[in-house]
Length: 250
Image (tube, rainbow, N blue to C red; front, side, top):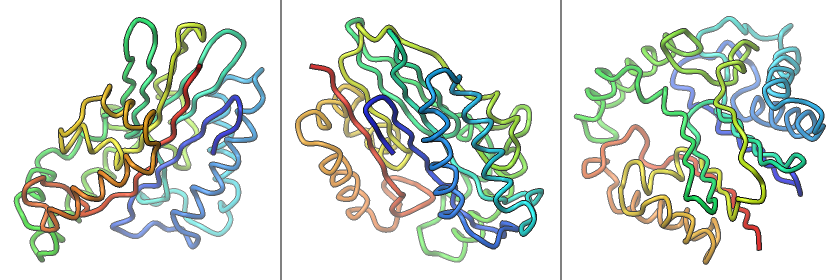
């Protein structure tokens, strides 16, 4: 979701287990995204407060029908960029990446805490070709290990049903007059750098500037399609949801 002064990007977490929710991940993301777009549009609010209230609002939409204490309750990585007065404010929670290109260089804001959890289970899953029974079993073990660390001290944090997660977001601001261009990438779009290594962050910005998000995602899909067994580039999904949002200042 984007407007003149605000970007909101959400990436729903893959459900490999039960969730205790009758609605599903897409419903959760739509509700949270709509709430955040409205709450963060109030530039007198803080982004952390907008996220706190957005999580609370969304939880209240299904508190009476779903088990929000379920370990797999729907969740989403969240990114927000907002123009406020003379600053560009940012918030990241979950495995999203923000690129802020300034006159002093590119600032990369990446919440990679999820990648530091369930490492043994992740390495085991990487050993097996995609689609094999061994891979599926290992991915399930990995998911359980991740869920045990989700929104826990020493683990990783995402928007789910617990409003306290908002306090763990990466937040900051950059003087607006120093900003030249910005991008927000979900982990599926950031694969070109973080997993495949075929571009660096300046290269990502250049592709977005010259060809737009469609071309960036086309390149992701081409590499994924060339490695359907996920053996050249070990990964948990053959093709991951990918979103890229880009803006430039003239």
